[in-house]
Image 1 (cartoon, one colour):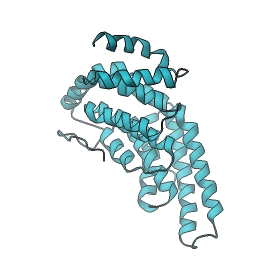
Image 2 (cartoon, helix red, strand yellow):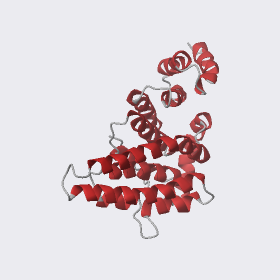
Image 3 (cartoon, rainbow, N blue to C red):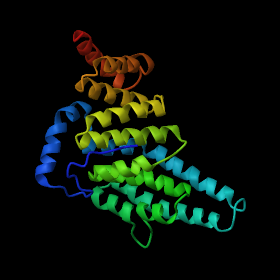
Length: 254
């Protein structure tokens, strides 16, 4: 279970300026290496958005195919939930690609134009596939808004059998922990992301993050293993082009 150290941290987008300065100072060096600024987070979500949209489409088809199979109470609820999710997800997509992302991410969370947002779907359609995906999307929206504690809370609640989405959720929790100055927890979730789905889609990214962060925490042997795995198992990945320097640096420290 993801546990964050409160240290006076409030669950709101607006935090105390002195505290924010302290957090930024604590994590600045690590995140210069990780290259996970807010803009990079948006680029990352945009990169994987097609996959997420595909999953949502599959859920919609699944709901329709199950009509008549279960009771007349739960099935209409599932179908209604998918309809609501489509509108919230539309705002989310606009936020990823638009010029007013903060406003659109908030609308995706809270709803608009008479439609529910992710938070309403989670509350009103608990147990449906749409509510599960809304939990994931809410966490990612909070991550983009800089509300890292809420991002952790929602992403940690997300439960899925989809190994890639599971890996992306755990990796995003790692990013949120790093942003609030808890590198040990961030490291653990990067490793968990790789273990959740050891594939070329997400594994190289989180192996690299675990390696960089692990080295900064003094876990040099483990970090070296992560970099070498990228080099041997994912030689065509973007991260493979960056590990040779890291491997050389860590080998010289032995």
